[in-house]
Length: 349
Picture 1 (tube, rainbow, N blue to C red):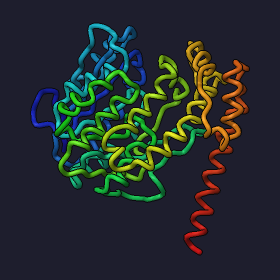
Picture 2: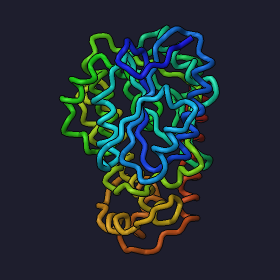
Picture 3: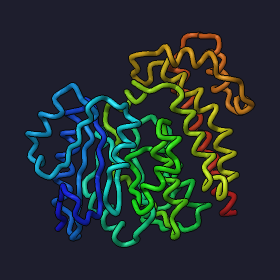
Picture 4: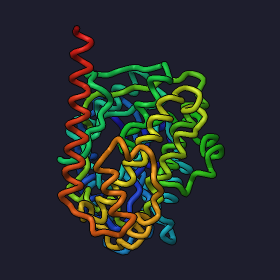
């Protein structure tokens, strides 16, 4: 059975949870973790650390009254540092062999924690990542069509598996080089994907590089996924491009980075259009409207008629239509699935 500790004992896995004004969601997550810990058979030390980003709701009261309160280490910021600095601070204070940054509104599936720990003990990876369930209607971004547990030591194959669907909760990282990695990518701490740059740097610094992909949906987003863009600026999407310039990506996957950058521009147009079309709830649309007027033209729009149409609407400040966004998503998914099937047919032939 695992032992949950709150001090600096030899900790195998530290589950780090950044939170702000999500008392009910955090309570749900802690209740799930409490249940999950009871199903683990491996004898390891686990710590659950919460960084409360100066919440103004009843988060602190909820934590004091939760049945799991004696097994949680809580740090409360004296002021709201913003989500990115709150996440970075958890990296800076984490002290364990493995670190799992877990969003307070994500939902681990039954048995997930036991499977994660078993895989960490068995393979001792640099990074473990798994399939994450997005809401119905989202673009499917899985780790290929493989099943089971995949061990990858070739970084040409591993890095695309790290970069696909950059969802914070789907990574568990070995912390051996964590503090040095934080120093080396400190210039990215205030960017939207600074936390993922840390993971790339940890892999880059590791003598033995091993990525484990658990081809199973071990967590999912909750029903309020549509609020994703609230509080973020459009710059958040472009920050992803900074990852493609990381040393380990350039050295191992230059062609992948080139193709991803090419596809990035229609993606940004679609996301900006989707926010203005009301597909995601956002209390302040002004930054997205102004950003839409400034998005430069890119040749990739010629291969995506919907992106071209959306780009024109954004530049001319024409009201966005929800139906256009929905059609574009389904059209891209259909084209992607058709391409996969045609490729599979060619291989059989």
